[in-house]
Length: 355
Length: 285
Ligand SMILES: Nc1ncnc2c1ncn2[C@@H]1O[C@H](COP(=O)(O)OP(=O)(O)OP(=O)(O)O)[C@@H](O)[C@H]1O
Ligand SMILES: [Mg+2]
Image (cartoon, rainbow over all chains, first blue to last red; front, side, top):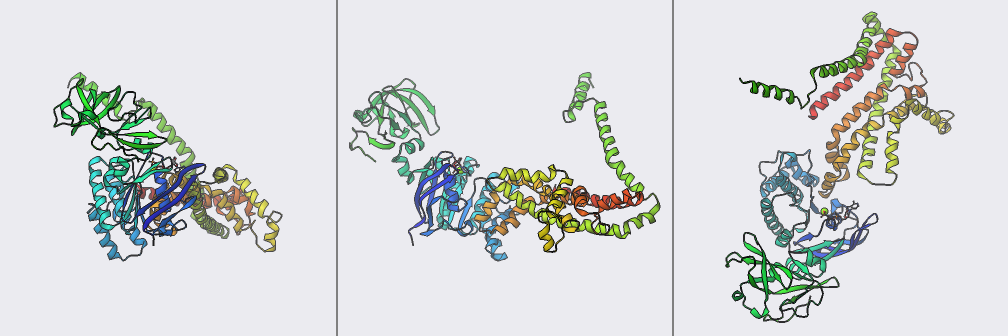
């Protein structure tokens, strides 16, 4: 048996002329939670649908535990799917919706009743069993869709933007509920999301999908800190991108007319005496200040470029026009579609890291 | 109460009727015209039919509808409906399914063909079948050899009726299936349901009202169809006459009272159908 629960090998999918999945390959271990992240139309749903068996790859193979699944019908794949629009059975009650998969498995009435009630409890829907889907709120429908997908105890759970229509607070709650439940049941899960924060927060691994390709597959930390492609670096996290005209202290000769990317968290802004490594810092002027609740977002001008950094609200406040020291800890330099991370040369560890 | 208050009240009043501000006489005129037309063209004829049917008393009415030829016409009409409705219900579901849930080449041609029975005159539909299945028709000689008669017998009448009433169910189902998409079906499949179960437990419950409505319209037309049936039937009294054909024969033979008596039967069948329909509409809402 293969060590991979899901193994996708060189899969291509065409919709007519349109190449929707290009040489998709990735592997997932059992029990892992994988987030699919990428711009709209990138091909995320297409990948999920092929794994579910709702769409046939034109070539390449999809294996579950080393067994080829291409010719296996969706019914026999042992998957649970939560569709983006829920796709609840509108003429069935919540109870019957959740019981559907168990009825298919011809479980006994008493077993079904017990299991559905258990799931209703688990999803905080107790007491709503007799309602119809159109009598529920968006978040409640969402949870019914989860319960329905989980009832037959699938090996693999596929979630297409499961939290898309839910407000931020409930979303956070459902998110941690999902993570906890998946850990407890050991289900291998793939979920599509538009929300980077969501993916970074709960996923074990992230697949960045763009224009039908997988740009990068890695842990959230890898994706965030060591983007391998130009696209990933720009797509993930906040950043400022420019071709440096002047000199940024600590990166002499690094950029050389190439485009660089700086994230706010790479930038330390302080009054001249606050920065521990004055030699590594550049001089700048505060141009804008935005209050972000937990911190200030500070826009500073350094060598003709506007950089964005954060500053704790606990520190003494800055004013527009203040002269400040700006320490850029690292940058990302683009070269031929690749993203290289470069550390500040004047810091204690002067070794530039190339990925 | 002040003058101003009264003014506001009268203003509210004219605005409150759905925002419509037509003068009263327009409303009265429109309603009268509608009632007049319905009365003249729908209610009055029904009353006339009833009045004529009973003009010579109940005995004559009873004799007309218990006559052998009349009973055989009733039987044939019901037989035709009994074949046509299930066949078109099945065809209709299948065609609507294929047309709304799949993309394929030639789909537009098929869409146009589905409307053909409504577009061509029923007489032409009948003639097409005579040309195909008649003794001198394309398939006629093979049918002759196999000793099967289609034209001038029940199978021909059933086939012609199926053709004429085909679009009712499809047209009723298509917009609904289109708007519903296949989300629920896909969800059912991922939960392990077989195609059969998906159809019975997911698709059918979602289309059942539209389907019943289509079936009722189809049934009403199947029992009332005249043109196409007239061409393929051959008018053999007591054998290949449906109710509409029987009525026409009686009428042409100047048996007016009998003709209206039998018409009453057909009207009653139609009314039963419409009552079932409105009961169902009541359930639905
Ligand atoms: N049935 C289809 N026929 C033709 N093209 C399709 C079909 N389904 C998807 N596509 C195209 O394939 C591409 C990828 O679609 P997909 O639904 O996988 O994107 P996505 O990453 O899920 O986007 P989103 O985030 O907006 O949901 C899109 O350009 C889309 O237009
Ligand atoms: Mg999608």
